[in-house]
Image (cartoon, rainbow, N blue to C red):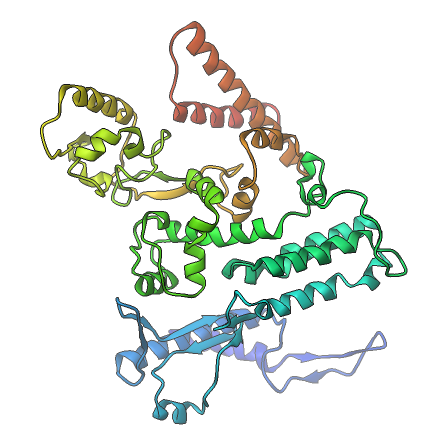
Length: 474
């Protein structure tokens, strides 16, 4: 890989000359040398491990190019799948023939198998698939722990169990209602259990325990809502990420188009986790509508955003705003970049119609041009998907989980939930004051002066005020 002799000598010196001691009753034993090279926890271990993994990756690629290894071809697009690497786990994919089995020393196996804690090939609709999760929750929320914890400690333990243990399962599989009922039952009995292990009387109803703290609840959360939010995260990743390997495989197996948003395409009929993820559009209609409302396109060169169908303006999709023009357009399904052209540095809209427009349709066209007047395309920047509900613009699944069950009033009240760090509290106060100030000023301009600014201008001025006030009130 191009490393010099001196550098390799330094690394080998670090690996071969180190010694260690074992603590026995608080006292270190006599030092002894290691016989197996690197130890776990060695600062050099991750660095050298990455180098070796990269070499293995290159060796597999070279073997494929030379025809010594045959990868799997997946789906209609024949996506090449040869190996997957995650941390110290490596999976090699090759055709299932006897010669390969004899060479590799592998034997026949049956599904399901467990990989990275997930049962591959199992049916997630069966309760027995979720049995490991239920057993772990039962172990964490065992009644003997209730004897040594007060109610505050029990509450913290319930939250940590819900937010950590089933995350991998909840990110891939739709939780059956029977499993959700079992998990909720384990959670409900734990806070009120008595010291002798008997079930105590609940002091408040469970809906209040699940409710956010800022609304008077205890903030435990709803496992089903969290499951839905984590599954909808794949909708976000499908729209956000360009073309990673997982997306190529999914599109190839389910006849999906990688450059279009998931909710605009035909739902796959092939079974498996991806079918359940896509069919959230039917099963969770209200949450799906909130997700679509939160997803918006930030337009750059206009090569990825559909002009009529996608919601890239604050008014929503143009086909809903101007249905008559959409019905006579010859550019249905076209991206923004195909609905105009560049005249030196100026973008000129060029619409094509199936027939000549009537006079009242020309009035609609004038309204359309007025809506498009503030739009500024940039041919040196690609379109990207953004999530407009995040509090501080952070693209995070917790932002989506936080936004799903709440109303506009809830978003306003969320500013009263103070962060723990003092600097964060100051920053939030500055942001809140700047937002209220500029909204109030815009309201006065529109009422008393009969003029106003655009939404983007107000947002820009709000950010500028936050930066300015940070210097005055650090």
